Image (cartoon, rainbow, N blue to C red; front, top):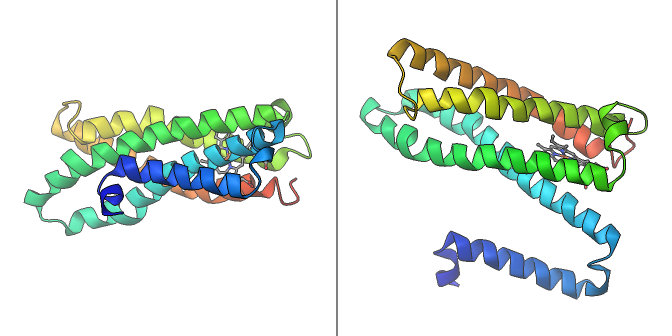
Length: 193
Ligand code: HEM
């Protein structure tokens, strides 16, 4: 057991093996049907979404409020090591969430109706638009400005401070949007609009 949990790769693999056992124990014959593949995509989508929004909330609830309490000489541990790694998983999870969500909406056969906010797919449509704005913010505002703020792209001190502030405010905006976005995501299966 110890040898599994000492490695992140083996831990994730163990989770996948456990899932396969649960699928088989629950009657493996349903696995592989078209309905199961749609369900599988839904699961993959939620998994990616949890990684994305989990890290968004980590930045907003943990890292940003903690920075002023950290002594200056210790700040590089966050800015040079933790933040770049968190941002790597954050931006690629955002993209994976958009891709799996778009594939899922296509498999469900309502992507155009949802994006057009037509009933009864308006709930998921609003959720998709909110999440698309959030993903745009991640890739085209937060990440380019974080690169300047963290020194991955070298700029003058005033531009660095401006970039850090813009990245922080956009991250806050995404935290606000995540609340109605998640409501709309789960609303589609629970009455919809
Ligand atoms: C542009 C990005 C996104 C798109 C295109 C998208 C699309 C979808 C679609 C089509 C569904 C199925 C709705 C249904 O018929 O029940 C769904 C469900 C869901 N999505 Fe998203 N989504 C996106 C972003 C997100 C994000 C960021 C999260 C965060 C965790 C998320 C979490 C969920 C959850 C929890 C469900 C409900 C699953 C269920 O009820 O079984 N989605 N999404």
